[in-house]
Length: 283
Image (cartoon, rainbow, N blue to C red; front, side, top):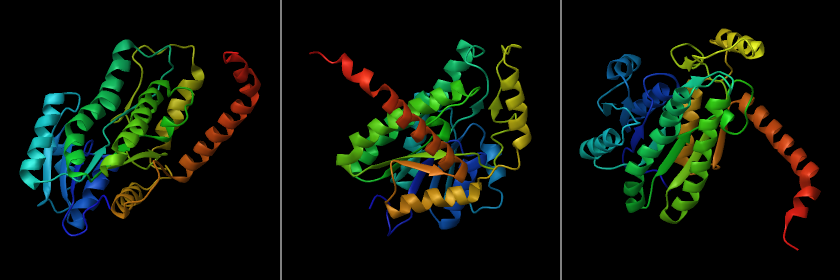
């Protein structure tokens, strides 16, 4: 069992002031767990949690791309709660633009948050979980960490990288009793598809009208996404508390459909390229 059953668990969660992160913190606090919640704005976090009990909350204003700031936040968590049980890497944002349109600065910023920020959290927290020989790491990716579509190249690149790191980490942690789960949601009814969470390219061209149209469609989708963030948060908690679950945990019927499409396409590619692949070994 990776989750304590006789005492409130301590959760360290990033990206908590809105969306799935805020709902996760709200449900955890109502359960009576201890929560260290990192955000870029503590005021926005507390505003989002105005209807939740906050006695067991440690709000932390942290830039996760700053390794020293992450280390200080983890130290503050241990000082306040005395233990660390579950780590959730949830911080991130969206980006819609063609690969050609993506600037160097935009690409580096995305990887700083989605990959290197998560890596900072892992470098700081894994030693404590490993020493305790228990715990659970949840890296919140996306269905676009399994498959990609036009306009989402940069976002998918960051999530694909997070998935690869997480798969390796899961194997490394297996001997230490620390579980690792990659959560891959579809579209949830949060503000992810608003300009608060979605970035557009600064160097957009007129060569990709299809992507511009898709961007407008996504912005209009706001408020009608299939996924329920409260149910998503509850499902994530249930998975951790049970000590069960696959390495890749999809959330949402749309995620399941897209993942099956990727599996089918990959199987078709494997069959189509099978004979050629076998010609490249030494003889």
